Length: 100
Image (cartoon, rainbow, N blue to C red; front, side):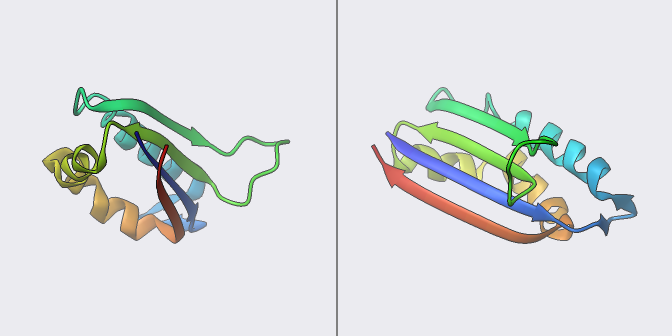
């Protein structure tokens, strides 16, 4: 299995909207990618919750059967289509992939 974890810190305002609005939109766009392949074993998107420790605003915690499955997801037109929005609304991004 290949774990793929991505975290984003969002701008306070971007694309004509505030952070909370952009976080909800980003989560919806990512959630819509959960079923893009039967090779996705886990796909969880979460917004940081008030009262709980978080240094980033949004996380994708996912698991793929292998690196080829992750590459297929990354190149899927639906995933590619959300990248311009994400690029416009985040100020920092962290990613880690690892085998289990």
